[in-house]
Length: 401
Image 1 (cartoon, helix red, strand yellow):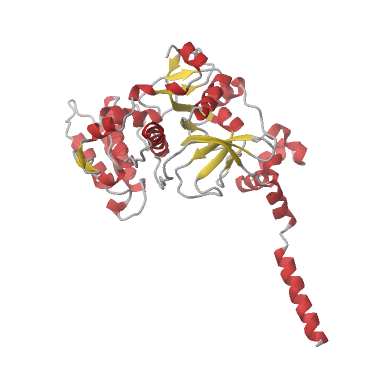
Image 2: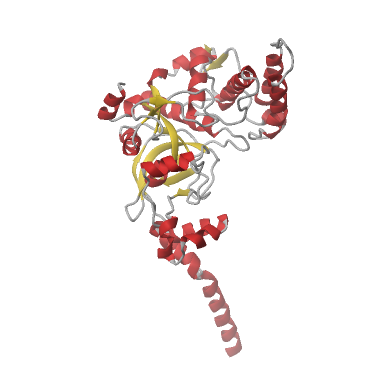
């Protein structure tokens, strides 16, 4: 009986030990942000761009879906593949017109989506084949599509022909239709017949309401210029604001019930795949027992682990106009990803974050939502699209809008 009691005690001790979290894990849990929503704008469901460089498309269509929600309370699921089909043909035409001296790639900008809506219209998601289904997949996979298209477009763009035969467009259109589906000329939605253009008109949005905002010093403030990144190939203008006013536009938009189609840099140590982004201050890293040199020697996984371990105690850098310009000029600030800002939240220390809808499916710790600190967003913004009616009155006046 005594032996049995001892064995039972050992089992209980073992179970208790297993139940106790490791000190390191407990520290992470203690420092894990706990978010309280300050303001949240209604948005449509989270999608998955999967293996395609189409964040610009998913984020901006989400932006317009949110605009429709705000205006009419109607929920739409707009078709990303319609936009891709139209946009990639246009981009190929540009490369050919420039005899190859232009980039043809999967990427794009928020303006590309606006351009397609204005000039070609749009259709609902179910008016075209679902992403991936035409080549036996359940989601996008653009690898083979671009392996086929890029050599084709390059061959035409660098042709030695004295007169270019326009038939090449038909061939490229066939490739796009085979992988993405044909864009419908007509379709029925909720019992009504539409063309893509009449459907876009029925959404009730004024395409002239949408502008792009940025903040750099190599162009005058309160003027428009085309941000010099390769995927901004249509060269639309962005209004150039001082960094503090750029930040005010985002805050004011959320406060007034508008979302923001954000484009910026997520190839940063402070951006994690788990749903968190903080502007890590490597210059003051020694306060946690690590100096900058040590930080730079850490692997990407080790950096993510350290950021998670520090959690709400992590010290952030303060974004500045000078640092933004320096990082843009030395290629540190890069044009990586498009997402949708739709709210503001605070953690238990009072630090404020933007609530951001991603297009990587139901992933990360917050099911497809990222909490990105205000410092991170301001420092790492390339540009963003917003309804001009979301601008503070004084800024709108300065821009003459």
